[in-house]
Image 1 (tube, rainbow, N blue to C red):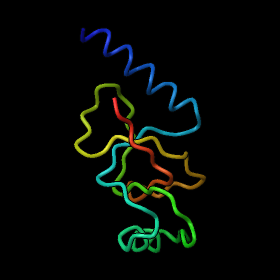
Image 2: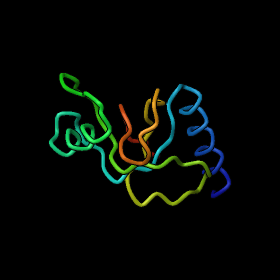
Image 3: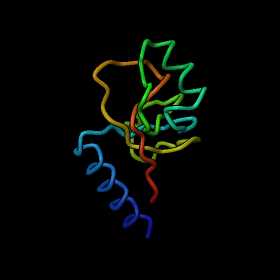
Length: 96
C-alpha cells in the first residue's frame, strides 16, 4: 500500500510542478486582503490591493518527496521575484 501511495504522491507533485507552480510548505494560507498578508506584502514591496487570491505566509519549497510539512502543503505560482520564505502568491492547498 505504501509503495502505491508513494507513486501517486510523486505523480501528483510532478504534475503540479510541471503546471508552472511550485510546491511549498506554508505556515498559513490567507486571503490577499487580510491584514497579515498586507503587512508582509508591504515589507517586500508587493502591492496586492484589489486582488482576491490565496497567499501563503512563511513558505518554503518542498524539494524532497516525503518532506514532513508541519503547515499547509500548497502549490503556488512561481514568483517573478524571490521574497525569501515570507510570502508566496496564489497558493492552492494540495489534498491527498
